[in-house]
Length: 138
Image 1 (cartoon, rainbow, N blue to C red):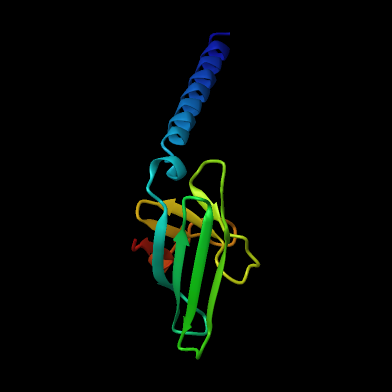
Image 2: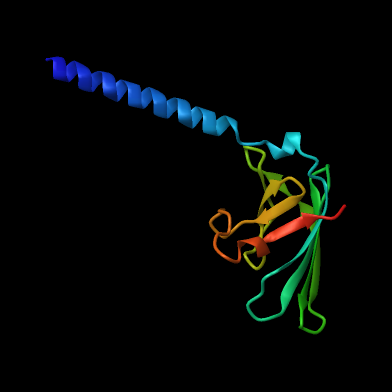
């Protein structure tokens, strides 16, 4: 009987601690939409499988519109520009561009930079991760 009470107390203590840790971790997520000065122009050269890189400039405006300009370096006259409206996720940490899967469409907003997210919506990991960042220029 004493052993059952002890086990029950331990399970309760572990559950309570785990819930508090989860709640604490969730509260540390920064809502970039409301707390950061995210509007502006971001630029960088993203990796490319069949060219020297993709020069990328993404301008985000406070009214929810964007302009995306890309230039495939090392390929003659292969530049694209598009404009439209972007959306935020519920947590205010990620933005989504309308996407046809031919270019990055999801970004995590950070202080003075955007992280290009992979096709599953996660941060790019590994030794090339630093190449999947657009830095704020304006």
